[in-house]
Image (cartoon, rainbow over all chains, first blue to last red; front, side, top):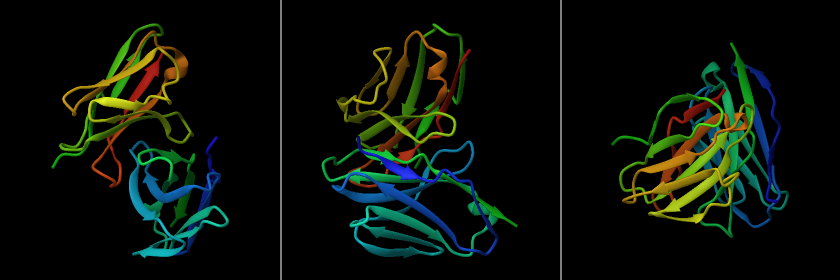
Length: 112
Length: 112
């Protein structure tokens, strides 16, 4: 069973702080990793993708990947109340060119 | 252009009735996915279409669930003899090539 694990939270941070969201996966053959943001009652939207070890930065967001540890994280700098949402980690295995396996998501609350 | 659309946005039905959920993918997107999201849960993969064929139906929970896609475009997910445990948000996503999946707004199904 290929699994993607996330801490369900809620993770609560003050406005302006760094929010750190973590995800582990069981399939060592995984090659592509994605972070989706889902506001309450809305559909998921892609915010970051990462494919190789290391860090990838996009504005206030940084994705970090460590394949040896089977670990991917998302850092949100200068957190804003508008970042309050559930963040879903998704993983694509090399054996599949189409299927994403999603974690259950971490609920982030940014307090003004 | 328009995003992925789904209809209806909400559906309330009685246990034992059949329901049909519709997905209109982004024009030109050849890949189409159906997911189910129950309260507090991640996205559960149901079925994947490439064109009109469904090479992966492994996520359909029972033979009461079926889906079809015609003309490489619109897809319908049918649930026969609905049960209360079928209550969830049903999300459709489409993809072009190896790019990201774009999600529709979902259909919230409530089985009384």
